[in-house]
Image (tube, rainbow, N blue to C red; front, side):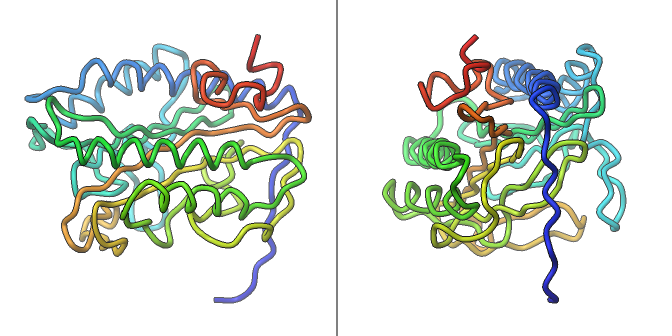
Length: 277
C-alpha cells in the first residue's frame, strides 16, 4: 500500500455544536433500542425502530444506502449478534434469544453533519463473563476518549484503548478495524486503531471530531468477512463486543457528542464547558 497524506477536517465551535445535535439523535436511538431489545425481537424490528426515531428527529440515517463499492448498505443500523463483530445486516429472520449479545451501530445526519455511535446490549439474562467483556470494552472506550486531548497524538487514543483492554482480562483486540474522523461525512481521516504505541500519528488539534470504537472478543482477534460483503465475524466463533462514541476536541476539553450528558458522568472536568451546561 502506498503512503497517503491524511486530510483531517477541522470544525469551528459552531460546527461542533451542529454535530452535537446529530449526536443527540443517535443517543435517542440508543435509548429506544435499550428498551426494545429483548428475547423474541428481530434485528429488523430494531432497525425499524431506529429509522423511525431518526426521521422523527428530522434527521436521516447515515448507514442506509451507504456504499463502499460492493453495493449499498440496506438498513439504518448494523445489528451484530454474538460472534458477529460489526456491520451485520438486520433481518426479519434473525430473532434475538435469551443470552445473546447484540452490538447496535447507528449513524444519523442532521443539517449535513453526522453522528455515529455503537452500544453492545444483553438480551435477557446473559453469562456474567460476557457482561464483563462488554464492561471492558466500555471502559476501554472511555479511556480512549480521555486520551483524546488537544496537543497529544492520535495513537495516544489507540494506546489507551489497548492498555485498558489488557488490564481488564484476556480479550482479543480486533485488528485492522477501528475508529475514524467524522463530520460532513460519516467516515473521514484519520483511521484510529485500537492498539499501538503512544505519541505517534497526527497531532490532536482543536476542532477535530473523532469516532472512537473499540472491538474486542472473548477469543482470537482474527475476523472473517462473510459473502454479503458487510458482516464481519470472529474467526473462532467467539462472542464480540463493539462500542463507540463520537467526540469533538475543543479548546477547553472534549465533548462526547453522542452521550446524552456530553461525557460528564465518566470524564468529569475533562469535558468542555459546553458539555456541562
